[in-house]
Length: 354
Image (cartoon, rainbow, N blue to C red; front, side, top):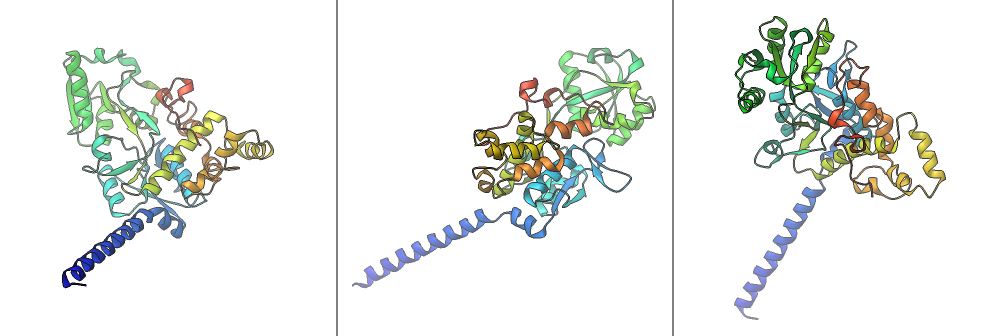
């Protein structure tokens, strides 16, 4: 064997070894997930707002309540096996993405709009779960003001947060209709609310969910109403840090489980009976797969095959969670509208559990 042949074989061997090392490294990276950290810790760290009634709000007894909070509980039920094993981290809007990137929290369930710049790798690089609340910017007025539509606000004063997308959306809406108005600008939502209540403006604007939450704290909330016009699309969704497919997949299918459970009429109170029915009847193949009686759908996500049962027991299906915090008898009543199931005229639907 010549020296040249020996050298070429050495180079080929080195190249092959490098490929093997790279493949192993990549395999290790793909297998690594925050799911394992959450399980080993035995607790989910969930970022919330803590200041928005109906979504996440710190109650007098020190506990958190709201739609976003119940989603945290559902995720914990699937990932840890116990809906109560959640540590809530209250975060402001500027803090939320930093907390996610630094690992201070495992995931975020905090009225966050799903958009391109937050989803893309060149932006925040987050992994969004399905939309859990289809929101939009609205306007709040006094019922006795005589204002019933956007056009009635021509030439009127409107309280708005300064330097926000809310301010831009408001300007775009009035400009498109050729209507003049007078913006009264404030630094944050609390100041916007104060300005409105002090009579400095005829209307205030923010996301409709935040308007409803703010109104719930008024002394006489029934004297105020949200106009029917929606000025923007604000699809709110939970999210995790990008690049962790196992965690993103688990979150995605937990949300789909909540929607599918409502579609199938499976509730927090009847899930045990439905589970027994599925066990007793082998012909109920769809329900058997969904509840983990047969098949291995849970294990494909790295979860227990009956994770759906745990999720539903944590707080019920999507409709139950919505009605508990935002339904007509709640402290923050918001008509479901687009947040109805697709079969009820809304946009909520789920891919099949197959």
